[in-house]
Image (tube, rainbow, N blue to C red; front, top):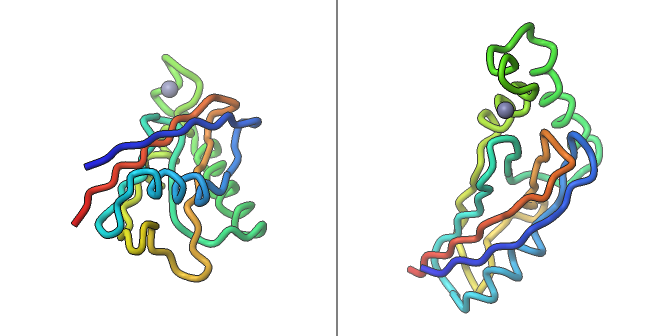
Length: 133
Ligand code: ZN
C-alpha cells in the first residue's frame, strides 16, 4: 500500500474543484500499475465524487447541497453554524474507490474526480491510497 496526499485551498463557501489531474499524478508517484485507489478527504465538511465536469451539473450539485440550508433548524447549529455542510458531505461521501490500470485511475470518457467544498474557504487535504493487486 502506498499513500500520497496533496492540499488545495478553496476560495468560497461552496465550490467544486476538479482534482483528477492531481490524483493521477499522485497515483503515478506510487509506481503502482494495477490495483485499487481510494481518494479520501479527512474532513467533515467537504466531499468527493466522480462525475462529469460540466458547469451546469456543477451548479446543480451546489444547489442540491445548498438545499440542506433550507430544511429547518438543525441541532448541530447549537454548537456550530455549519450543519448543512456536514449533512451534504455525509450524503455525497468522503471517499471514492476506483480501479488502477496502466498507472492511473480508470475513468470513463466523461468521468472526473471532483472535490466539493461545503464550508469554505479552507485549506483541504486529499489522501490518495493505492493498493497494488
Ligand atoms: Zn460543524
